Image 1 (spheres, rainbow, N blue to C red):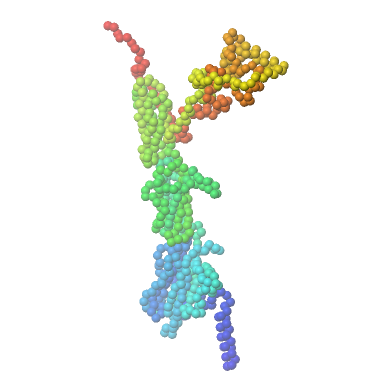
Image 2: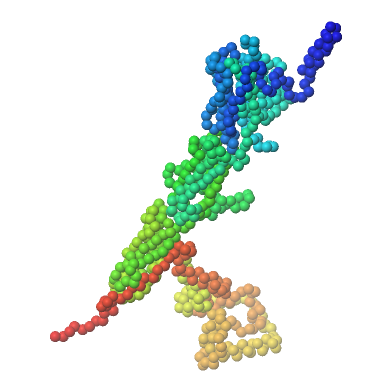
Length: 604
C-alpha cells in the first residue's frame, strides 16, 4: 500500500508539473478531436453538399439535446462569399424538446463546437451546445484555397483547463506570446456523431474549399461586328459568371471606355485615353457603375466619334472579394460616302436629274452633312450642303441644268468633310517669286516719295580733301577697261544694271548712257568714305525691289510656290470624297437664246 500510495503521489506531481509547463504553444485539450459525448446510439453523417460549408446548427432540446441538424450555405469559388440562403441538412435524434437555432454571421463559417455532457438514464449524452464561428478568407500562399482566418491576441486563447465546456474545434488553441498572431484554419464541412432518441455524440468534420484563381469570366456579345461606321448603333452586352455559373453571387460592376486612337503619354509609355462621360454617347438609360443583383448588363452607343476603342468591365461581389476584369475592342470608322448616282444621266439643257448620295452606315442623331461643289456651277447650279436625316443612309437632290446653255459637262463632288482652303495673299512677293523680277509698273507705283536731296548725297567730310593716292599699274588697267565698258553700254543695260542685275550684253547704240551712280574708282576719294556706309541712288531713280528684304529676293521660291499650288484645292480625308460627271446635251431643235443672231425684220 505504501508503494502504491507513493506511486499515486508521484503521478499526481508529474501531471501537475506537466500542466504547468507545456511543451509547445498549443494548449492541452479536455476532449479529443473526434467530438463531444458518449459512445451510445448509432452513427450518423450530416453533409452540406458540394461547394458548401457549415454555418450553424439547428435542433430540439430539453434536459439534453434531443435532435440536431446542420445549417449550410453555398460558397462562390471565385470570391469565397456566401451565395444564396442558408439551408438545412437532414437531422439526427428524436422529436422531444423545444426548437433551437444558432447561425454564424454572413461571411463566416462554423469552425468548432463547445458543449457539455451529462448522464441521463445511465447514458452519457450531450446536454448543451454552442457554436464557434470564424471568418472566411482566400489563402493564396501554398495551395490556394478557401479557409477560415482568425487573429489571436497577445494573451492567446482561453485556457481550456479552466473552461468547464468541452471543445471540438477545427484549429488548435494557442497560448499567449505577447504579440498578435494570425492563424489559418479549416472550416466545418459536415457533422458526424452518434444518436438514438437523444444526441449521444457530436463531432465537426473540417476541411477547405478549392479556390478558382481564374476569377469571373466576362463574356461579351455585340451586334453588329466590332467595326462599324460612325452613327451606327452599337449594342454591347456582357455577362459575368464564375467557375460554377449557378453560384455566381450578386455583383458590383463598372465599365469605362478607352480611346486607343487619341492616346496620352504615361509613366510606362503611351496609354489609351479614358473617356470621361461615355453615357453622353449612349442611349438612355445608361449608367457606368452600379450595384445590382444581376450579373449581366447592356449599353447601346449611338454616336461615338471615329476611333479605336475598348470597353473594360470590372466586377466584384457585393459582399466583397476579389475583382475580375474583361475587355472587348471595337472600332468606329468614318461614315463616308459609299457612292453617288445620277438618274438620268446625261440630260438635256433645262432638264432635271436626281442625284442620290449614299452613306456606308446610318446618319447619327443630328444627321450627316454632305458638302457639295461643282466644277461648272453655271452649267448645273448645286447647293453647298445636303443633310442626310438621322437613321437613314441616303438622301436625294434634284438638279436642273441651266436652260441658257447648250451643252457641257460638270464634275459634282461630295464630301463628308468640310472643305478647307489654303489661301495665300497675292502680294508683290509672290509675283517676284513667279517672274524673278518685279513689274516696272509696281516699281513706279511703289517708288519712294520725294525726299530731301541731302538724304541721297554722299556724306560730306569736313576739312581739305586728301591728296589722291597714285594708282598702281593693275588698277590703271582695270579703270581703263571699266571706262570703255561704260561708253559702250546701251540704255537698257544701264537700267538693268541699276536694278542690281548683271548686263545681258553690250549694244553699240548712239543713245547716251545714263549717269553712273557710283564715282570712278579714285582710290583717294573712296578711301575717305566711312567704313560700312552705302551710297544711295540720286533722287528720282527708283529703288530696286522696294520694301522687299534682300533675303527674300535671294531665297528660292519653292515654299511659296508649293503653297500657291494648293491655293484653291479642297483638303479632305482620303475616302471621304466622291465624284461623278454629269453630261448636259443640247435639246433637239433648241437654240440658245444668248447665241441667237439678230435678224432684220422682214419687209412686206
